[in-house]
Image 1 (cartoon, rainbow, N blue to C red):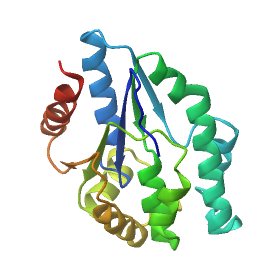
Image 2 (image 1 turned 135 degrees about the horizontal axis):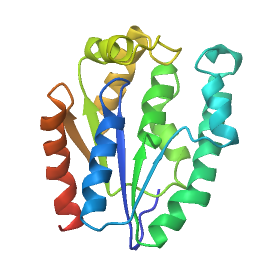
Image 3 (image 1 turned 45 degrees about the horizontal axis):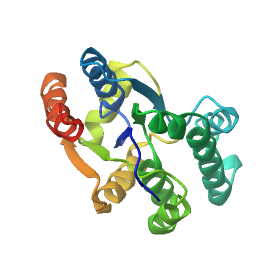
Image 4 (image 1 turned 90 degrees about the vertical axis):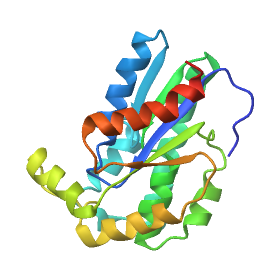
Amino acid sequence: MTSGNRPGFLIVFEGTDGTGKSTQLELLRSVLQKKGFEVLATREPTDGKYGRQIRELYSNRHKLSLEEELELFLADRKDHIDTLIAPALAAGKTVLCDRYYLSTAAYQGAAGLDPDIILQRNDFAPVPDLALLFQAPIETGIKRITQGRGDSLNDFEKADYLLKVARVFEQLTLPCIKHIDASASIEAVHREVLNHVLPLLKT
């Protein structure tokens, strides 16, 4: 994984489902755009051909082996970087990405693969300038998914599995990671996000 000298910034939003990542990404995008930053907001899995295949696994995860599943995530990320992320960073934009390779390490690691090997397999990916890791009790996240959104849980959102995912996230110690208490109010979490982001962007 390489950071190199690039004019743009890569900020990724990581954590278990229902921790409010997407909400916080949109709040941050609004603030940065008002400050005059060129912002690209994106997500993984993408809406590309590999991302669509990954989304099909939400209701039938067992149709692929773990290694085949990982290969899909890697292919989706390579395409995402080549077509969107790398050009945006080269153009000096601030890229906000909802999930990135830390999620792959945590979710596929919780399923039985080695998180360290997963990270090694992502050595082609730009290193985030900041990885915001949103953490909240699993039951809080599930309540937000089922009651707040009115959604049913997919194959990646079962409670026992998410507990394993959270444990893998906790074991990740990369320098770019900053932990966010996502059990607080939306406003409080937003302030904490800004406290990490604005010094990085020197605003």
